[in-house]
Image 1 (tube, rainbow, N blue to C red):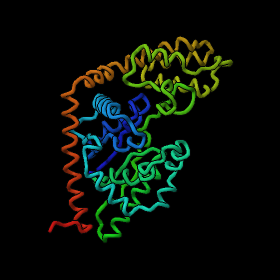
Image 2 (cartoon, rainbow, N blue to C red; image 1 turned 135 degrees about the vertical axis):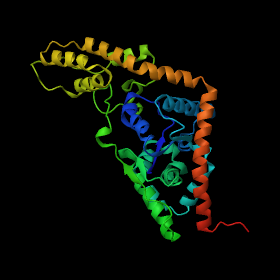
Image 3 (spheres, rainbow, N blue to C red; image 1 turned 180 degrees about the vertical axis):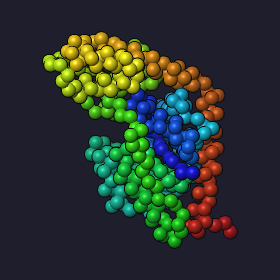
Image 4 (cartoon, helix red, strand yellow; image 1 turned 60 degrees about the horizontal axis):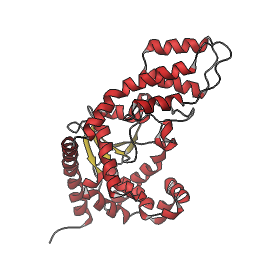
Length: 331
């Protein structure tokens, strides 16, 4: 069975974009693949979070992904820092990573340009930590976005380099996993691009958003002055609203507003009100689960413990074999 691994950014609350995008596919994949999902709290240290903030964010993200359908009994869902083996493999890979290749990484150059006051070693060696995350479990497939493709290529480089240096066909060479047509792209509320926190809090509908917040965000969504002739093509901001409508509303609701647009009688205020209520109805059961889990210390601790135990079993085996290959042997 293929091993699939994906990291979860601890800064990212779940919104409709990543729920319909990756997470629903993760829920399906856990039935057919050997899946490892981890909350990347080591990675977050490059931004120097405060201890209480870091702990609270990790807890919230864990609660949200559990509420969205990831099952600790079916997949391995764990917190990165619960595996000290990752830090050991990270150190080993750093010994065989070179300054020039790390400095050429696009994401490092962008970070260094945007935050010149905090160009730390963790940013520079992000690709080696990402590689350790992946090959510690000998993953075959890694779902990655465009911004991480270069880092995945470097993971392949480090895996090949280790195999070549020690003349062992030990680490598999991981490939990008493409969801293809299964990946639903959800637009943002700002009239262009995709939904995401990086584009601004008001651009995204988060699963834990209160109904009042959802109504406020949707009513502020970008529109235009309306169609001027029958059956004209919808501009991007309006098409985005219809795209959202299609994933949360009943088909007859979509048909009603589509017909109103085509005959130039549409009232965007009515469309937004309907869209807001349909989003609230859709997210309500997820929001209730998130709130329930966030307040249930026992359930959260149990899920984290189950995930850590399963992940450690895999990681310890890999590190034990890596140490033997390198020459770290007891006397």
